[in-house]
Image (cartoon, helix red, strand yellow):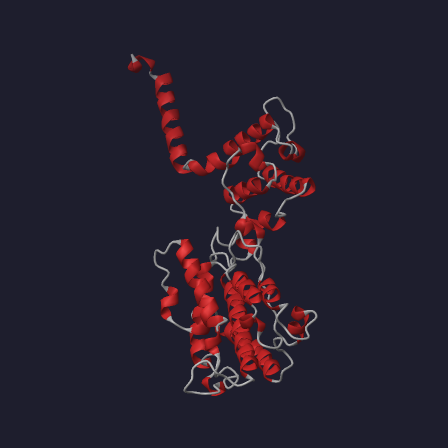
Length: 356
């Protein structure tokens, strides 16, 4: 592996940089995957089409750049740092997002997919810059592939280790680490990064991901939809009807993340919304909250999904009284105050003349 990556990066340096963001076991897992990938690339069983289209085909290069920019800039900096080195990549400072994206785009084009990554041994004329032997593009494609596979695998394992398991809450909201992918991006998994950036550029590949899987290169991270959900309230009744915010409220008030495991997101159909509302009602009922309004009308999941204003307000009031208010009141102080008031009442009853 060290020899195969010689023109790509220093194996020792990569291990050291990856060690900052993942465990030794995860680091070894990435290197084992890369060992198989590099072997297949070196033996020409995994290669780009002729003339290294990621570099020579402007459309494919722009597509690959766009795909990699779907990474959260914070994570993309880390990935580029692990593969390319350079501590300056970790110093995001107070850059505006537009400038940061432009910088990362330039870095991808010039360093990750650029022509300057080919070894000097392929120079046709070392005096005249830019002249290379006919096998230059083949070597260039191999180097770019190794860097791409290394970056994606490293970020996949780093995020997997730093993500908050769903049974403990929502990643990036209740802990864990920032989302791996941008909220507005259409890519939400490591597999999509590889497929959409390389599918058209590879030689003789049918199902690229399946082929990679047989080599032991397996990517696992899929960004949870709840990590991107907007929990801010704009319109109370419209925002509650999918049941997700209601489940989130129950989770926070009961300190019970098990409800999150049962939430369906995105809830883009009435059936899914009804499921989430039903789940919330079940937990609320188990917490001892009355599921009815002041007139005794039962509040159902259908009422919430349909946006019934009066019943939703009644449910929220019941939740406040039975779930939130006890959290706001210090029981010890309340008991002490009640004892003091009771004592005063007894004194007033026994010695009414002292109160005149």
